[in-house]
Length: 181
Image 1 (tube, rainbow, N blue to C red):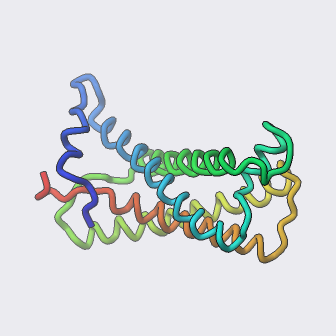
Image 2: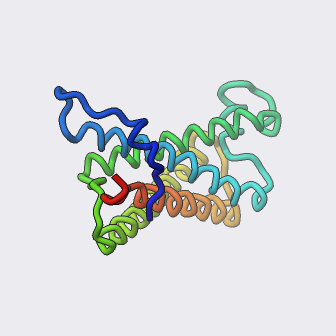
């Protein structure tokens, strides 16, 4: 599945002769991870907000450590911080793929492309579950002093699975086809 426009080639300069040949693909994977993280956070938040009817936990973080007051007093910083965290987490996912040898090389082999998308999806879900586990055990419980009940915990974890599905699919599908130039 192709998602890059013809102008992508125009926006990405050729690497210098001094740059290692993998520098551009790695940088692109990090950038794609950041964009995918932003998109995935938007999707996760669209799922979470109407179900939980509350701001993300970043509202409590902002109220406790930055501005004071009630967490409901800080909707804009809470959402901006949540989007920032998701974007950075996506960039780290893209960087991990680059470091682990995720191959962004275009291919005409539909089976290879499908495998890449499947691996991206599965890796994204695994990554999101790790983030979710860390988020609940360390951030919510220890840092923010929250004790989510079972339904809040379920929504928290399902939201992160949605994040992982979106991020993994985004990363797995960010490859142009050789015939596209």
